[in-house]
Length: 303
Image (cartoon, rainbow, N blue to C red):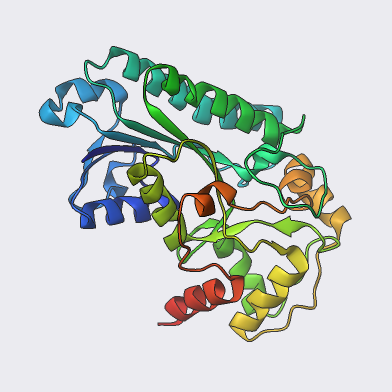
């Protein structure tokens, strides 16, 4: 199929484009970082360039992963606006593109996050039917998904990827955790009781492919492994995989002092998110358990 990927040079996008190309799909990446586009993958820098792509303009699948990283900087008002624009603006532009296409894509897979479910603490399983709240991360995801779902009105099957913490080599949240843990300086964050919904990068790519190829999958999809873990367990499991201790906790007040609202919502709050939609549609995880996932990643890092 002809597949358009926005955000195709990011952590998830790079792995996805490689998999799509291996599977024989024709891939076009929307990116301003042309030098980072995978070999054999066509690139454009603006959506209006699709007009000149000939047969490539007949797009079967659009996968929207574009967006400024949400956890890279403290959330000032300016940073929040940049985060909102990078996600909602790109998604809105895609919807306008769909309206003008003589033949619309059959599938639209658009990014979101487990931040949709907000910051209220709970030990109950959270599936795709749970509601959000008034936190910034939840409101962002709600607005983002609302724009993306306009594709359904246009007759395009739409999936909303509520992604958890994606674990893999070469990027993502784990790349920021590895150094202190390797030095024996890692530990739980705050109380350690907050849930961490996670997913291995290989499974994340497979989830996107599953959404692309499974006609029954539409709407919200929790892109997380079936075994979320509390932060304290996650920290101990990562330390064990690295053969290091995990005895240096980061107190909650330090997180709030250094990171403000971003740290409060993304590091100190957590939900026990489970992938009900995926499991009900027959998806099988390669790495359903955290220990196996981390051991695999650490093994590859050491090769």
